[in-house]
Length: 562
Image (tube, rainbow, N blue to C red; front, top):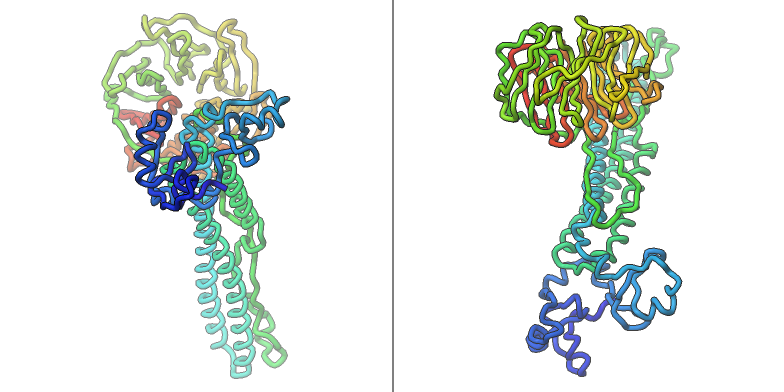
C-alpha cells in the first residue's frame, strides 16, 4: 500500500506527528509546510512536482493504494519486465528477472503515458461502451412503451368485440383482460429489471470515466501506468456484461398479441374469449465493436466511425455553368477537383476554393476518372464512345498514352499499380499500368454506367438496372449485395472511406447514402435539401476526410466528413 498520505512522511520518520499539506509522487510521501519548504529548496528534490492533499484525495482509492516502491526490497522501481508484466527494483532484477530479456527502464515506459495509445484507447472504449448501453436502454424503453400502446389497442379491440355479444361474455371478457394485463405486467417487470441492470452498468462506466479524468489530472505517470491494467480489466468486465445483456432472453422484442376465438359466435359453447400471448423477435440493437488487441504505448491512435455517428458539413459549392452532363469526379489529395463532362467532351478542373482552374478538351465522351498519383496523371474511360482508357498528364494537359479495351469501359478506380474498371457485359476488369495486361476479376453481366471502388481486399460496384451495390473479394467471390429501393434508386458513383463505409449516389432519390462495411444497413446522409438534384458522381478523399458530390449539371459540392 502507498505511504500514509495523511501525515508528513519526513516528520513521521522523526517520530513527530504532523499533518501533510502536499503530496510528492516521486518521493511517494506527504509533506507538511515546513518539510515542503525544505523539499522545494533541496537540490535533489526541487524539481519534483507536488500537489495538495485535497487534490490527491480526489484520486480513486485503488490509485491511492498503489505503491511506487518495491514492497519486498523497499527500493524505488527502476525497470519494467514486459515478460512478467510487472515493475522491478534493482534487486528484483538481480534475484528474479536476471534471465528476462525484455526489460525496459521505468522512466522510458511511463513517459507520456497519459497521452499514449493505450490510454486513449481505453477512453474511446468507455465512450463507445456508454453509447452501446444507452442504445440498449433506449431500445428497452421503446419496447416498454410499445407494450403499453399495444395493450391499449388490444383492450379497445376486446371491448369492441364484446359489444356484439350478450352478458354471458362478461366473465370471459374479464378473464381475457386480466390475462392481458398479467402478460403486460410480467414482461414490463422483466424489462424494468433489465433496465435497472443496464443503469448499473452505465453508472459503472461513467464512474470509470470520472476516475480517468481525476487520474489524468492528479496521478503520477507511474500511478497512471500501473492503474491502466486495472481500468482495462474493469472495462473488459463491463463490456462482457453488455454482451451478456444482449444475449439474454429479456433482450428479445416483446409484443402483445390477441387472437379472437373463431367460435365466439357460438356463445353457449364458448369457454374463453381468446388468447393473449407475448411474441419475441430478435434484438435490433446494433452495438459498436471494440478491437480486442493489446494496446501499444505511444502508437498513433485512430478511431473508427460508425455510420450513425458521421457528421457531414458542407464546405463549398462549385459552380459548373458550362457543363452538359457530369459522369465522373475526383478529389485529389492536393484539394484540386476534376470533373468529366460527358456530352461536353472535356475534363474540367477546379482549385481547392472551387474556382475554375483549367479545361482539357477531348475528342471523345469522358465517363469516369481515376487519379494516378505516382504519374501525376488521370485515367479517363471512354464510356459508350470509345473502347479505351486515356492516361492524361496533369502538368502538360496532354494525353500520355491510350490503353485499348475489348469492350466499352465505364466506372474506374486505382488499386495500387493497377486500374480496376467496369466493362459492359463482361464484369470487373484489372489492367496493370506497367504492362497494360488485362484480366477479369469478377465475371458478370454488367450494365452500362456501372461504377467501381476498391478498399483493402474488397471491390464494390453499382448496378443501376436492379438498384444494387455489391461487394466482392479481390479474388472474385461475392461477399454481399445491398438493396433498399426506398433509399437507393439508380445507384451511380461509389467511393469507400478508410473505415470501409461505402458512399453511393442515388440518382432518382436525389441523395447520397452510406452503407455499413458488412452491407447490412444504410443511412441517407445527403439529400435535395443539401443542394443535390440528379446527382451522378462522388469521391471520398481519405487524407482530408472530404466528400465531393457532383450533380448532373450546374453544381457540385464539397463536404467535410467527421
